[in-house]
Length: 88
Image (cartoon, rainbow, N blue to C red; front, side, top):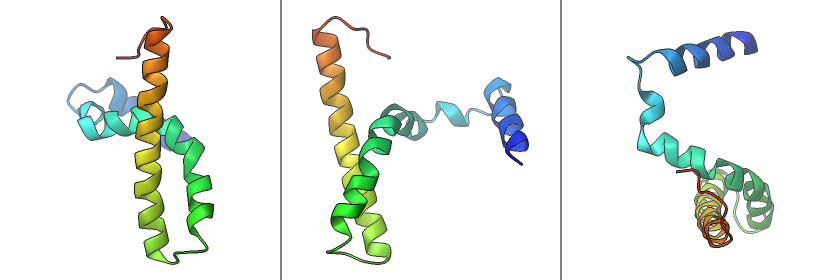
């Protein structure tokens, strides 16, 4: 099954007719995905004593998204300041 998923991703990447990867929303999530990965579990555990159920998932997603975006922007500015090249 994972091989099938990899094949689908390869087909999407090389097929010019399908431009799903050029969408701004996906590019945004791709840009902050590592920062989101680093903070989402900590945010989820921090909010768990106060919120439960679907609200916990929604609130932790939004908070993690804000932290990830802020973290990316700060780190990108530090990299530019010290002469490291920006991805974009």
